[in-house]
Length: 425
Ligand code: GDP
Ligand code: IMO
Ligand code: MG
Image 1 (cartoon, rainbow, N blue to C red):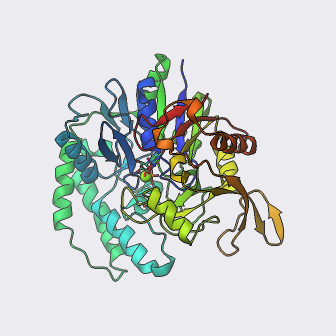
Image 2: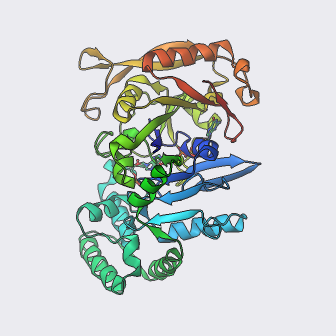
Image 3: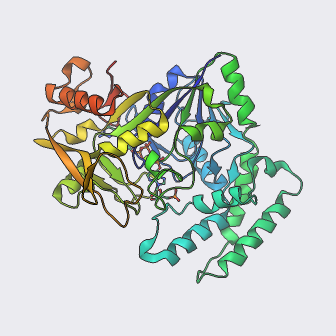
């Protein structure tokens, strides 16, 4: 019997999960997404090509790996179809090759869920979450409110009647907003996409994943978003609507907690956030602008500029604790190549005290970061491909992080390409 390894983000998303899942996927028989939906944008680069995946797991480019969209994911059939159409146009056909299956219990994002997301954000004005407007929140609300439609429902004779009933409910809610919409075109596309997703095999993810484990096969659960966007433990209410932490892999796939193996926690050598909400180490100056420019910090899903700042160790410690991280993966170290000095936030000054944890309220009382200065390495990391080429100053930075975080850094990423990845231990 094997266990499920988990790879997830320790910050506010966009840590580089897609790249590393792709790098690790040859070691796995199954890659399984367990939460979130097309709010995710996971970027992969290899052979001079670049792909952004929203719903499809990042194991899709590895010949032998099966990919599962788990029950904890919310699926927009229109976006999933578009993703698969685009992949096909680029010469990849995971459905034709039998490399993709969908959980019957995964919930569907309806066009009206997107409208509700947009209407709600519009109404909140300046206080808005800054959602990706993909309908994520309203879909999870219908899931927990026990109104949702699931992938398995698409094959039922009364699917259209169930759809109409839910849409009617949404229209009633929308009538309370000053929000104009036209559903006709979207609905047409939706039903076309529903017919398409019926051609992808539907499985019970709980049995599917557990049968892989029984057969001794290797499974990697791919997280979306990041720990600080978790609906329970993130910077609420500026969070997404799912559990992005390791526990989410259990409920989002149907595996017991004792079936969790290694937990890979992935983080950038600095920190970013897209959308609203607190971000203690955010930089509003030229340095922040440099990080954004050098790191190409613009959203893979929405194109929005990502907010940038220095690495936040109290937040990382919190994320490591919540997830039971066994190995760390540090991304985008190359983005810091040009700095003489970089900074790491080791503590916060908060209500007259110096603390090293994330307090409950970081919205009305803003923690002030206390930084440690670290010598930069001033080396072009994108050109290195061996561990012994890592500059001493970067090794010192890694050793400092390992000491602070009490977890080893297993991989170091020095560029967006699949090959720009170094295994440290
Ligand atoms: P994900 O959502 O966690 O999969 O991350 P995204 O794909 O949204 O954002 C990560 C971005 O950084 C993508 O544009 C990647 O191509 C890029 N990237 C990943 N690793 C590295 C790295 O080590 N260095 C640089 N410069 N870019 C990277
Ligand atoms: P990946 O998987 C970064 C953010 C949004 C917003 C908040 C709520 O690529 O790391 P939602 O649409 O989920 O209701 O938006 O969460 N957000 C992400 N930020 N990366 C993501 O995914 C994100 N998915 C959602 O910007 O602040
Ligand atoms: Mg992303």
